[in-house]
Length: 491
Image (cartoon, rainbow, N blue to C red; front, side):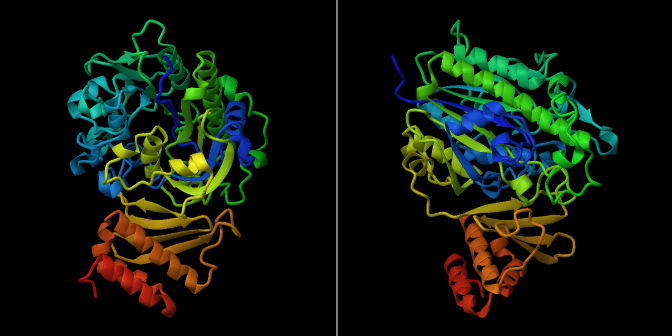
């Protein structure tokens, strides 16, 4: 009998920026399977990782809330444990709702939403560095039960970057019963995912139920060099100027081999994604399965003299988001803003469970826009970076045209802003070449986002005064009216 509810598969690669897939014709990446998949899907070119680091991005994905609300404002590791930074057991995630609605759920790969426990150190990845000299624990064991938020098949780990020798805890395994693998993690996880989809002996899931499978690969996350040679060979003869072709790259920040390895890992992810798509088709599931390919955040790769993520620049903030449901969604490209917390209510809306969306979800259900082509009336995204140990707090907005970010230094309290016109300056090389009314509009828009997410900056008089100071005289009245509505006692 054909399931009434569709199956759902999310393949999420870690640290894969939106520019690093072939069909965008930006980075010189070979990704034929993703490219072909994009032709048959809806591609959202303005999908944002609103807090572009691993744990906050994943928490937004599952909870439908921004970091201040779900509490995951930084990565889950030993130094943030004292702040309670992990996905709370009582948080209602869309996986919980799918489970309660009759889905079988599988999670494969990197989770990174639990704090590590020192008692488990001998069974996890262990310390990175000397624990007496600032070393850190990253890997964590997630025990069976509510902390897994509805996933009944579990083949996962917390956070470990040994791509050639990954480890996993399967289903009811205790912390001392981990599985150690001698295989590139992407390939191995795809092997497990294929077996889950086939479910030949019925041991992976109940074949009478629709299923939700999340496959979370760590590559192309650093260390970039841990990628099979067969993928590296494809890039070995590409000259540096073609590899690092973005005009905002600081050539002193990055060497060509780093870019080669990063792109090689993406090609490896692509090949294995193709394997997964083949099995979906072979099993006759393509018409009744929602397939999403995405990333948790991007990678700067030398742009603006930076490596890593945690930045408002497009290389960090923008992620690939490609969604297919062959029987329902018309393939096309859409440029409207799609925030990470929108994914949770949108998926529930797509499968007809919009009445199950919790009232405190901050993301927007945009399923009707995916189905009906009409553009949503929300035209902006929120950017937030407020990690406890980071020297500054950043909050801002991105529209289809502008990126505007206010930065507050923690030690001095100094406030500054950056403003980029992403249309006339696509590499974001210039700062604030726009008229004052643009700053006014964007600062009011930021205020609206702060209100929506109940952000503590609303109680910071220095920040409020700074935002007011960015207003031109024509906008002061509008600024005050918004403030009075949200904070009646503000003067």
